[in-house]
Length: 430
Image (tube, rainbow, N blue to C red):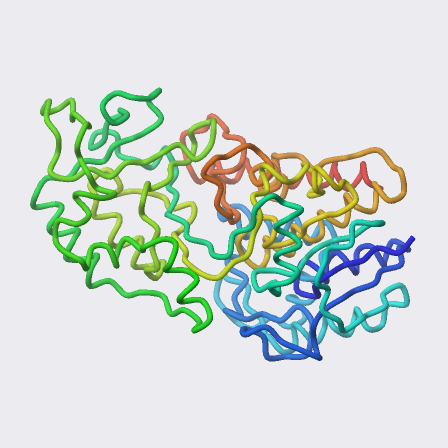
């Protein structure tokens, strides 16, 4: 039986090559070179569009670095190509984009088990095995077809920042739900008038990230960035996401001048989302400006806010833990469509999808990677019930916590636990 892989970006390339290297015949579809999305220019596969950086290489102190090491152990073509095409970038892994894409394209072209077909797939094939890996700029007809399978489809990513729970200054915050209606799922970060005015001045003058022309209308129609909202007037935020009404500060017994609410992002309460703070500020500016809120002065940002064109499904409702559709268990979703955020995360999701698909195709028992790994934690996050679901990148906050106070030591132990779990997973699947 041949497996259809739709899309030859990072996730699709990972899936196609993994399956082909394991003896599976693959039909790889992509609109290139007959057509291009608004973001793509090269005829080569696995094209990097927004950046040549694959983030940190620090295995024991950064979740993005740890994820890369997990993928190296699993034999990722993305990591192989990155090593071949890497350029000096300090502690980060950056690549020559042309060399990176060419390396992966050559590997695909040379594989006898991969047949490449330049064709736009307009409807998801549900007969046989299919891996959908068309990414954030999936064409309109295919998007419609995917949406019908998934029950819904999102066309932009408007995410607020997420902070680590243990980095919130609770001496400057308090737990309460508005008008005491709830179960204490919110941490509230009050500001007095002087603090708010300093924060407001910094926010409206902060630098914003540049967007592609094709992104602008889609993104801002559905969700207004907090900095755009603030520019409408000095008190706009105080009647919006910083509304203090119904939140009695136990230190004063009154409502503060302005209050940011943080909402639990996971059941364990290790991550908190900045409610209503969708933003298009540059990441460094988010750190600088949002840290001016007293309770966030030492905040560790696990995910920064993003606003960009990013087609993705409501994975917690639509997908099984192996990335297959609940209604169509032989149809898998890989990469950014599944709700992961970032180049390496997309590649990892593509590789993991292929591992699961191959086992199902060959009638072997299901073996899921441990949630103690970054890759496994991402898979668990995007397939676990979440009514406020937004795409997620690699970070230590999604991993099961360890009761170790020192952050550096805790991350090191998490990394060691993760790599041991990956090796165990490799032993099981082989």
